[in-house]
Image 1 (cartoon, one colour):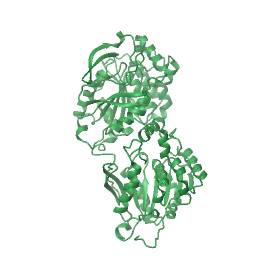
Image 2 (image 1 turned 30 degrees about the vertical axis):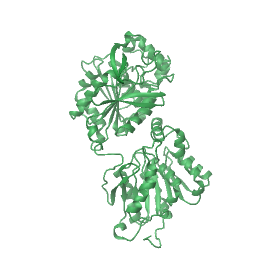
Image 3 (image 1 turned 120 degrees about the vertical axis):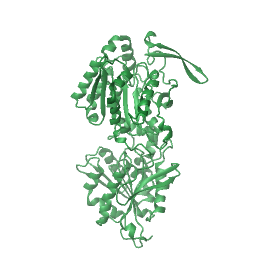
Image 4 (image 1 turned 60 degrees about the vertical axis):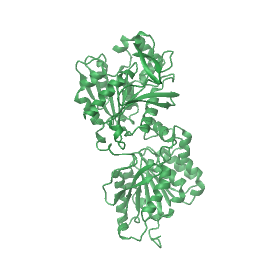
Length: 601
């Protein structure tokens, strides 16, 4: 553990003395000093210090971020992120060596270009929220830092684009944070993690009893039961089903490391829980970060390559607003200049067969809003194929299908901080652009709004708020539909917090103003009898409870609608539509007049 004494010179922090902290007899994190939330700048290529306002800590907090050279030249590229958790004493001194290590690997083509984020976990936090609330490290990292990095840098903002890794105390942190909330990270790397025993009596704790007592008192309030409740052994057992087969996991430790026995025991614990992972013991390596990483050899780079394998070919020349070209019959990608975004935006359009031959005919439009995974050519094509077959079979009138780009987890609303304005873009730009560009029935009687999951949420809030634009609104497996965003049955508390922070500015009051629950209350008078509404959910869907409550809410407001629960159907759009069968097509026939008196108007 290290303590630094600093002076300021022309606004820069200068390192003057570096003293072994165990000689000073107190802890940086839990001494009488305040936690050291802001660390100095680092003089290292590609490394910058980032400050952000932490509500959890109640102050500004720093982290350091390494970006590869290519980040500055390929402005349309998005990059995966490695979150590196340091050991006891703080990780500040090791940042230049680690950033250089990963930078060389990128230059040599051993790993894909990535960002490395070095969070500030204080000196002895064990990457937990301290019992007294003074050092909320877990909350800060999972619910604030990750969303801030995604909002600030061009990242692959999805779990398949993130690895959580750490050494020593950081390995302990990677194990507990990565397993406690497996949603943010696709891979977890535990390097010589510790303390990995439930008694907190391992060799390093025994050798440093004063440090052990400081941590037990400072983090867990002196309570061994609290330590055990937050321990990676306990969390792995609790989260085994959520982690098993969904997170790439590795454990590595040196043969000369005094944590070897406990790391091996933790590996055996994961094996008993049937959590797939690899365990590597590196010969002739002690408790040394870089020696361990180098000793792993090619196996080290293969881990990162495997973790990011699904991103190959997807991170180059991609912006969140530009979707890939579709490869499906009658599907096209449309790009336009968006004033809201300040650049190009794309979406997908499907045109029915008669569109080519009947040049004087105008067609109704179905706007299909995607779920939280974002729009993809494959998912849009699957919907278009189903609806195209129904048109050819005469089950529904020929119509244009539009698949807007609502971003992964964009929530189809204008974000609190103004960075993303999906509602404005959809209502004021996309609909008018479609009516100008295609031969549409450019009136409410010619438009239907439909969506699944997050898309159902968007369909509800946009359709009910702008009911003058649509003849019908359809909510399929919609969510979140609850009045207060206190839980997210499909995503878990971590993802709920990230959405609340990213989209709604961390304010429940703003979530409420955007929620279908409040929107329908404010527009109930216009909706009574003026809009065809259906709500459909499977009885095995995790959103069933809140769909039922929303149905009751509509009934209490005396808003006519159709509500259906489909037996045996989980949260699956294809199975839901298949199970609906003929009722699905009758909804669209009811919404649209298939034989208008003058189809050219």
